[in-house]
Length: 226
Length: 226
Image 1: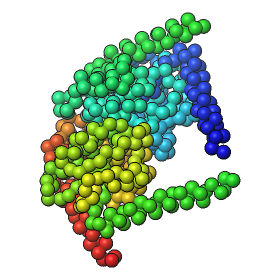
Image 2: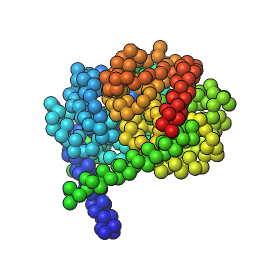
Image 3: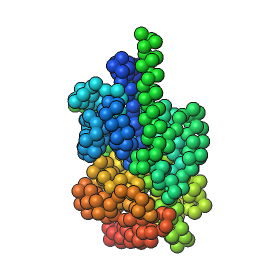
Image 4: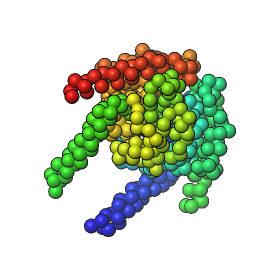
């Protein structure tokens, strides 16, 4: 009985992985770069997206699917700036692909260049779920402390980019950019780090330019494959 | 088949609840008030415990079981001040009672007045697990934003006390103590809130006095029951 459950679990995992991979490919073929933003509650994911939307203005089409356990507060903050749908998990600690796809179908426009999935605020559980993203972005705010990569390794190991947010608060908190970089690189050797402040705008342009380059590279690779 | 699984699940839940209740009673009978600290990563749980330990000095015997996914960093910070054991979940997003009890057996002294379980940094999952505590304490730092109680309702609904930490940073962040109180009370009507700063010491004495009173009331109630 126990032996039989192992292939069953593997099959389910493989099935989910295949579904995420298939969705990732369909987004690629439409020219959409998909990000999955993960962080602790209050690290500034929504403020970062507001700053990115303001930076791009009408020059790049970004859409957002925003996940929360309860309330539509984050969607209300983003709605004046970008097409957005709130995904409410009703208690679940992370987003899963079926809910993301449901939100995607309800988004008022699917003619996007960048789709951002803002995950539930949780530095642990979302790291175990592939939502079909091209880039997983872990956001860490300086007020959380520079010891977090080692303490929450999976979030940093499975992400392709790290944003160190709220750097405008650096003068007031014990946080070293050198120490956090060393701690992150001990977990994930070549993880690129961007220092940003959604409040002052510091670092936003650099991060946005990086994403535009990533999208260009993705489409170039895809064209080569085709 | 589906009908049969319902009582099975209920039995497991009831069994866990009974075990937590039994452990809570055994701590009560030993005169130990047990706290379960839950918060986002980096809200300042360990710094708060350091400040409490410094406040009490030798006048009150506090011990700590500190939960993390990886590393023994928090235990190393607390070890110069109080008896402490690190509980490492190896990936799990919350503490469960058997690991807590294992740590308890390894604590160098069990002759305590207050036992604090510092949970894994996660504002979601730990709210679903009774660790036999007398008081669940949800810690929210002002840098996370005053909209968190409504967005993470279970943590605030199931806690008996809320600590608003890092109030020394209030001049630098958009956070209203009035708004967070209203948001917390919309979820949990009579939740007591304490404003603290582990850095400046503000509010620490008040919170510590509250805990001493809670312990006295607990022992008084227990004596009445006996």
